[in-house]
Amino acid sequence: MKIANTILDLIGDTPLVKLHKVTDGLTATVLVKLEYLNPGGSAKDRIAVRIIDAAERDGLLKPGGTIVEPTSGNTGVGLALVAQQRGYKCVFVLPDKVGEDKRNVLTAYGAEIVVTPTSVAPEDPESYYSVSDRLARDIPGAFKPNQYFNPNGPLSHYETTGPEIWRDTDGTVTHFVAGVGTGGTITGTGRYLREVSNDAVRIIGADPEGSVYSGGTGRPYLVEGVGEDFWPGAYDPTVVHEVIAVSDADSFAMTRRLALEEGILVGGSSGMAVVAALRAAEKLGPEDTIVVLLPDGGRGYLGKIFNDGWMRSYGFSNAPVGHTVANLLE
Ligand code: PMP
Image 1 (tube, rainbow, N blue to C red):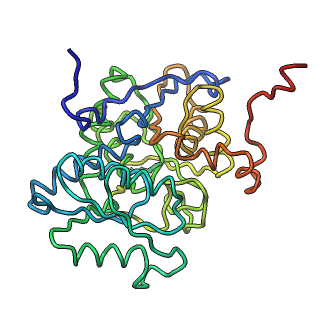
Image 2: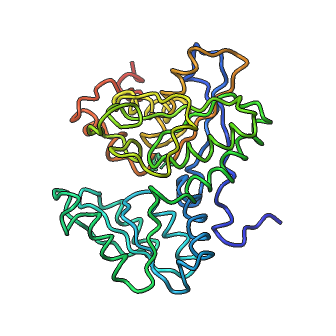
């Protein structure tokens, strides 16, 4: 019998698959790791388990406690899923720009959400940050994971993502590419792969143009979940050999190509990471194997990256589209 006891037992052990079409003309092997196959749909399930385990162990989270975090995305889903299975409540604070679908997925898992105005400064008492700090202080038994500074984020990738990649490639991986948001994925996975390979694996970050990791100041970009305007404690820049900056236009065009040509429906930060990997692969040969981590699936972006009107409204006209009935009938 092959039966998981609870949904949490299905977190991690995600597969690697080789790219064939978007790698045309390159000789290096490019493999992608599909984190959307985690039960909550992203790599963030991994950090949620580890952060909650550590908080229980350290006495920060007691039976019946409440998890409070400012998050609108994948971390919220991961935390809500683990919290629900362990009997904790969740309160997520999100800015009002977050769409209804993203709010609904959090409430579907049983989380409470508090919506704050986007148009106020971080120090304003109504801001995303101020409200979550206040709730974490005032709700009895509250625990704030603080994913940008919690060491258990990178540790979860050091203990699971890195070893999975090493095992599944039989130690043949030569390069690892991941987008940088909190920095937890690249720091933990990269550290493990460097250690286990005697420093032979090269670690490459992918970053939206304008973000601090690739030398910017935090200029706005549209790709979600990656890039920052500050340096989080979860990121250790000494692990990373190189950071490649990718434009929104290139990230989104590749995100569409992955769905259209490889059958892989993923989010914009995945497209961004693949663009960075292909740029690195231009200088590599048949002896090289690049593993690219794809953090989440594309269903959360159907109204944006996969919507022609939305793409055009931001001037992204070079996005590949599928065939039309008219040209099939020609
Ligand atoms: N892509 C997406 C869609 C994400 O939600 C995140 C997490 N913020 C990342 C990439 C980056 O992962 P990390 O925080 O581990 O750097």
